[in-house]
Length: 64
Image (cartoon, rainbow, N blue to C red; front, side, top):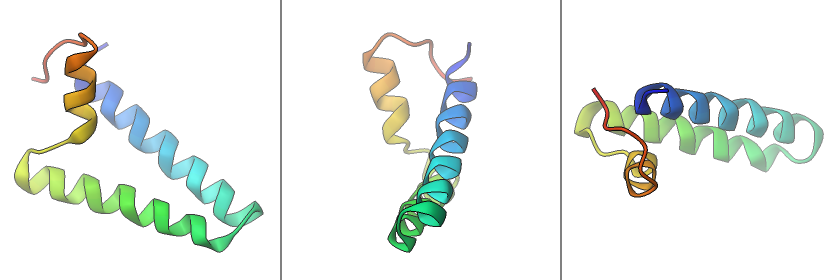
């Protein structure tokens, strides 16, 4: 699986998990949803993605 697909999978999983936690546990979890969205936005502008760095250190293939 490519690094791009893994990053999208993690982002989607984090958004869905934080929405569920915000609904069932505390509305403060919606701040985590905002953080994920902000990180996706800044990554599209700057090309900097912390998860990509972590995955590269774990030996996952390079992004396209």
